[in-house]
Image 1 (cartoon, helix red, strand yellow):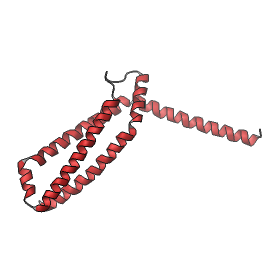
Image 2 (cartoon, one colour):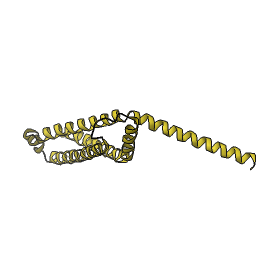
Image 3 (cartoon, helix red, strand yellow):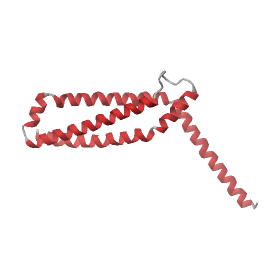
Length: 154
């Protein structure tokens, strides 16, 4: 083998090893904090569900519904808001299911191996979580637009 090939191969091996060690470091760091990450995500989902229920309660009250029915355009906005809220609720429920599938039944993971296994489960469901978060952002935009339009009419 010529020296250039040896140098190129050594450079490639060192670069690959560096990327592998970086990935392992990030994974170990994430595994260390996986319990906290899951608790934060669970808290956020619970807060979202509570907020959605309170908004649905306000919109479902007879005085709000009567006020919105006084003008024809408001009824369309009211149904658009209802549809967006329903979409948010469905997405929040799917996030709850993902969290239940990832979380341990016996509480927090205490050993590194248990946290690493939990982190692997979370990584496998990352696309589901990111998709749900993207859908929530879309619903949020729809709700903001509908509520802004509604405040113009009311």
